[in-house]
Image (cartoon, rainbow, N blue to C red; front, side, top):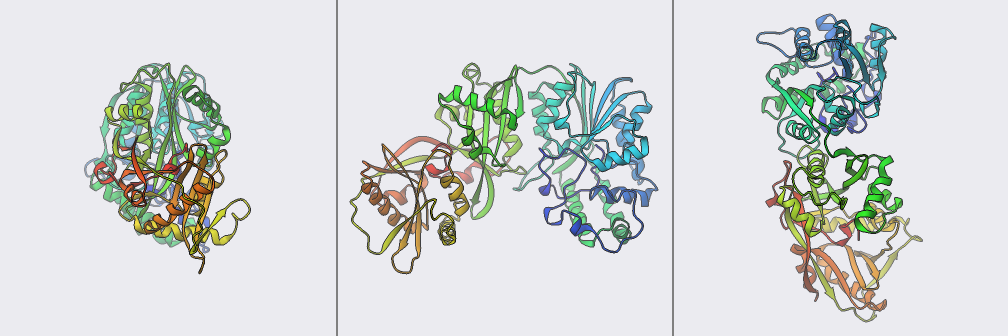
Length: 622
């Protein structure tokens, strides 16, 4: 997919589930014509309508080289300075690895159509796809409307089994989920068919934040899991890196003309230059690289790993009932995973979902800094397949793939956490997937009599007052005080939005949200979230500065007494249990351990151990 020569910060890369085109994602604060357009326009460029920054790259080539054939990196040989020749060398590397014509090729991402045209000239049967309508329009103008190209994403592309002999990705693979790439390869290629990729990759990751390039080692591991063998791997990083030098030089030199011809403002080019310099630095230190990968489809795997799609939710719900013996309603699934709140990978055997690994997005404070974590849940394997606990079994395949896709440095979520049962935790530890960072304790108290507390009172938040603005402000203040006390810890955000969405809109469970307020001055001292059941009253969550815990526990004991409960309890990570024991509670260890990702690169487990503040409200099933 010939498009990668101009770089924008990959931390702003669009969701790979939505983008599989040549388009570079502009940082969100600069995305759109309202920022990029300059009111003073000159002669329009033939590439003006291409997405920014592709329009810049194509126009730079037109100005500097006299024409634009490709939208991808050049591979510069020694003492070479001609970008067009370097780009052609890159394309020739791919062409030289194709089987003899007339084999059938699917070109995923067709850029300006130059590679597509060359393939036709050489006698290949070629079909091309790109989701970019502007690129399709340019190709039709250059090559005619009769050619076999479609404005379509690979994710949506359907064809008969083994319809192609080669799947060709020329700087398009980085925009597509690797699971999609290899699954389409399994569907569209015959045994022995080739999957050719030339693209940028991350070679190592050392810091938080989304870094859109696929990690090369993860890509190779996934290919193996899905039944592909690596035929050839070429490290082309040193040959590709001069493309960035070229672009930085030319865009600086042609700044005014680019602004005029493309109707851009200075800020767009400034951000582009900043991003290109960042890429230049990452190439120089070995964190980014460029490679050619040639895979061959070796066999159809026993199990197929796929991202779980919305139309497969009924399969997930059926597996849940088979696994746990009770049902999950569609409303419960929507509450957990809907509206972008979750990610899931499934394992299929002969068109039946036999395993599922889910994750629910959670905002956290990571040693005082905002980060995004994912809570692992609904991990299940069909009983017929559960006995295979090796690194070739479904549990390992989906767990390792989920961790590689989503958790760690450069991934959407810095950390993962959860509450696995003991069997799952032991298996994951033995396979090197998880490491323990803590465990849960239960604290129990005797309920108290209804005796009033003269200095504080209780206020229950319910459907009648939930929209009162002062409530949101009060809970936000309680959370700010709590967060300030947990600067050296890991804690899930507990602001008003979280309280409302987690507790007040739950489709099945009923929680009582109670504010503890001073009788004089109306200061809110803290928030209690209680769950009442026949076994007793549970403090499901608590939001306040830590010094207020004794007061909140006191009121919780009173509420338990008012409701004639036999006991009050709460669950809390063991490292914070002392705050509750100090109020007269009796502590008991639970066999619930807290895991951390030990598989993909991320924060060292030692730095996370005994740092989590987690209560039963942090569990998706309580």
